Amino acid sequence: MHKKTTDHAIVREDLYGTTPEPTYGGALSFMRRKYTTDMTGVDVAVTGVPLDTATTNRPGARFGPRAIRAASTMMAWEKPYGMEFDPFDKLAVVDCGDCFFDHGRPQMTPDLIEEHAYKIIEQGPGLLTLGGDHFIAYPLIKAHVRKHGGPLSLLHFDAHSDSWEDENDRIDHGTMFWWAAKQGLVDPATSVQIGLRTTNRDTLGFNIIDAPAVHEGGIDAVVSQARAVLGDRPVYLSFDIDCLDPSYAPGTGTPVCGGLTSHQSMAILRGLRGIDVVGMDVVEVAPAYDVGEITALAAVHLAMEMLYLYASRPHG
Image (cartoon, rainbow, N blue to C red; front, side, top):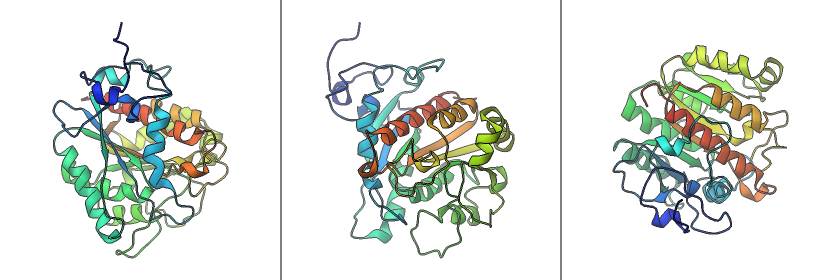
């Protein structure tokens, strides 16, 4: 029996394992993991990047990391259903808090995010980032390329391609993958975009499995196609919560009807077990537009699937 206590985010001593505490109280770290910036013995660090100044529609994703942490208390008492093992039994996971940046100096923010991420991953841990708007994936990918080399393969779930052409001095959550491709940070030919349902005629060579294809072809077909493209290359996984249909994720800035269900997204991720994930994020949760925390809760489930993928890496 575990010693019954609370505030495991503060008092936890063992970085492994799932330790229940009341869902209605306690310090709100991600999944009750220990709050620390000490990366000794850590396999994965969770961090938040509360940025939403790159949004093109409704703001509010700056509150996403906080909302995801709060919603995670509803899941933190047991391993997610159907997983062969508890990711926390194999991974020492900590919550290292949020990236700091000065909102009054927005042009400095991308570099600060990159340095925040690199400072963590250069010490060894993998990184799971909670957004924040989707622009943050760009400096996060730059940090991962600094560590792992590039280009990386991108596994991207979204309603939008986020690869519209742009000028290099803009900070926009709809253009950062155009720059990532043009700068050689990601390789479109070995990358997959899943769930798209807005039009961008210049695909840049990305392999696209749009939302209708997911609905019509089914989960197994999507998994098979994605595996064939990604192969055994190092993969950065980026999940925009608006990949989900607004009925499953209303709390986001740019919702688009016809999206994936929570089940489809989770099943696709679980079906990709064994790919070489090196970094991951879940972004664009905007709790002001949420209903009953269902968007934040979906983000937690997806984040746990990401940790399951990370724990299942061929060399993990």
